[in-house]
Image (cartoon, rainbow, N blue to C red; front, side, top):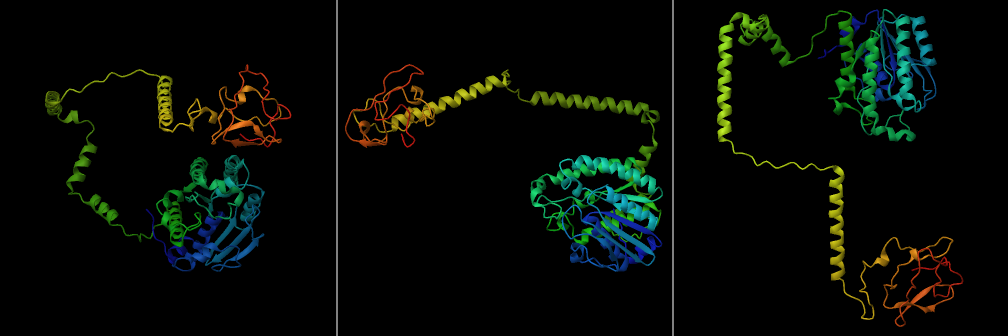
Length: 453
């Protein structure tokens, strides 16, 4: 539940106060919307949220800036003073480093802030190497220690990282890191969980914007990281409500909720029977002390009724057929499935052989496309070495042409062509590993590089 703050409400709340925003572009959007609400009760333009490093916006000034780039050295410092309210912003690419130390010193020298709003997550996990997550955990603890020493009486609020989309177009995610966009949203959830635990253990406050915005995805920008003005104002109202409750300041109570009003009226109604019964049940410590006899009798009657219902169900129910359970290991099961699949392959191969038309009558073996000569294990030996009989089948070698390969029809280079006459070439029976002497016009027993089967 949140409240709606107008310009006069925030001025009254932040009168003679100082607030500092530390973080990335989402925190900068909160800073700009905070200034916009200080000046008027209108929504901030979306174009103003997207621009960066401008000279002035809503009366503030750009104190310090670096190069306008997407690198880790990006710097932007802004401050504004509107009706005795001092607001400043510092852009961070790492939760704690030497630059953050300098920023904390500047804050303590200029003024003692009353509120510090801080967040840093996306840059830490994506732009600081493979150990970015490890350094993020360590640096967050160092930052909390510095806050304890430098700002013991300040209201420090850690703002969790809002939910991001799967397709990101942010400046921090360069082309070399595009592979992170599919898993970064889950890393954000884990980082928020860890940061909340560390911040709470150190005694500081947490504003879970990830929880409040995960049902407001329709108000997220096209880049998948930043948010529209309505969502930013929603977070601003949550932040102001948190500050009001921390300082024990009355809320404006401008929200309108029918369900909340009905619940408040129902709680105040003393004649409501539902509330009266619930209060009586809460006041009763042990029901058996009030009427033990009645409760015991009612429990016995309930047990008898339940037993009768069970007996009638057993009579009317049909006995189920029990199938004995087979105790079979996974290895036996996989062996059976593999054997079944092998049988199916053999059956398909045999059917293919029977249906394919046979070759000429001179061929002792019917010619089919499933002939073993197409076995991938039978391959030409093209590397340097000798021919062994494992490279050729141990039966008659038939070519899928209209004729057969003839040694008389081979040219000097070893390139074969096909004839419609001649005796089929037959390999001699040899022992495994024995060198072959093919009856072809080869210069040696190696296959020429341009020879093709």
